[in-house]
Picture (tube, one colour):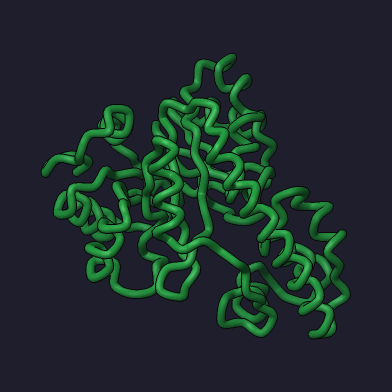
Length: 284
């Protein structure tokens, strides 16, 4: 099995990098990408364990960007991962912007009457603290009934507790990934605000060269639609479970997605390794 979208506790996943590798091997995954949010730390920490286990580990990242005023996630893949020093430096800048947002988010939640501090959140998320860590505190302290309510009522872009984060534009994110020799893929396109098909000329002009057609959110019709869209615009196809662990996304399994709804075809990885364009029958 191939899974090109997973997270460790170096961002908002629940498993340590080495444990994620063990889980992947146990579940029959042979190719795995760790795509933590705005950091390569999970990949770095998992590399030795993956090599020892005979698992092909792909260097990846999930970047938070802004597209037409809305937060939009971009996956970056580096199949021939090198030092990537310039890219890593750029990512460190994004991490500082994340922390600045977290300071303001903690203050905003206290304004709303919640006993929550930045230190509590950072004890969970460490250097990559994000909104899911604040959601966990809201849940544990009984302020919300579940993660969904935490986001719907307080943390999503339209919610009362939301605070703006300085994020790169989608085009900037694509550019830094491509300049570092990577593949830039639109993450979970069903979550993008607006009509993805209508946006494609703009995204391709920015340099986008892949789209995540296979995802735990997608049924067969959505998958077929995004594969066709990839073919229409000459894009590579990527896919993965978006695994976070049982705490954040219960029911989503590495390699097989939600209730077995995910199967990433082997030729997807072949195309990524070769940098080839998806063909009319590829991945169908």
